[in-house]
Length: 378
Ligand code: PMP
Ligand code: GLN
Image (tube, rainbow, N blue to C red; front, side, top):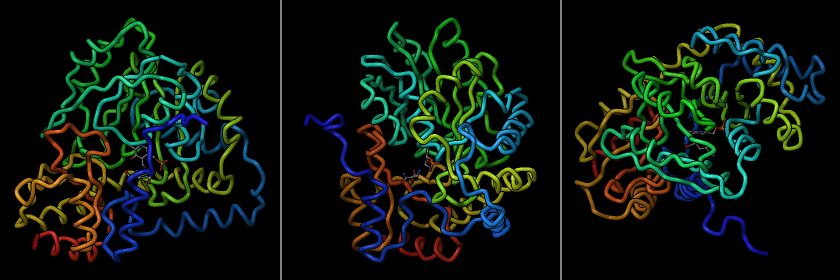
């Protein structure tokens, strides 16, 4: 056979988690919380199971959950999503992203991706025959050069990916970014895929700018979200996507043959749990404390820091420590010093920025203290 993804190996998250496990290292690599989700939420899942919600859920998702999702987005971002026709519950954001791309991208279609980018975007485009058009974000601020994006648009451009808050840089898009994006997309048929899985993890009083808030963008966008990121249960693989009715109809044509529907008891549980906004609104403060603790603990280390504005990742610049290539250095840190991180070149960080590692600070304070003590001695 001829591989459809000849350049793709095993994802770095699997590689680094496995290495961390083998080496008995503290795993600040793969992004998952080191603590459990709310017992109340777990009880709701158990209850849904004993209440008999163990067969297929409706294809687009449990209606009560879709109502809660629409209600949350419409309230937070002053929008008007309809639960019946514009919301689908998915097996995490990864499935939503893959299904969106499969539903719209044909061979040779162009997809603009801002690099560095989360690692599942590019293979989804490639496997569907699309061509990636990369736009490089530059350290240390990783601001988007919207004129460069505008210049990259051709008649073949079918889709553009954005991700705010951004994995791995921890940067966020602001209102001006959204206005610029609205301006350059106006009059085109480009579909926007806005990956907002970290929407509830934004720091320093800043607010998450969802495309849901901007009519020009909302009209052409899929927004993807992840309950795993928001409710500390990445292993449940639950999330959702919202889009205008016409786009969602195309999405569901593929979704129904891709997964058909996702875990029913969890959907019943989230339908109840989401009724209490505090369950997701408290996340900003919760993770800001973690970020601040981590930054304080490593302030005397030789790593250089630009504090993350969102996400539960912090990039650290190790150029004062070594000029080693990041994959080598991340492996050495894991093997010799027992702290695992993610080398950022796998997200296609620009050559000159390669001296960056990404650390996940969604861990209990003790773990962060242990890791920081090691990092301060490097
Ligand atoms: N997008 C980004 C930017 C991510 O960091 C992740 C990892 N959670 C995903 C999508 C995938 O989310 P999920 O685990 O819900 O599939
Ligand atoms: N999103 C997580 C991260 O960036 C990884 C999820 C996965 O392993 N697929 O670390």
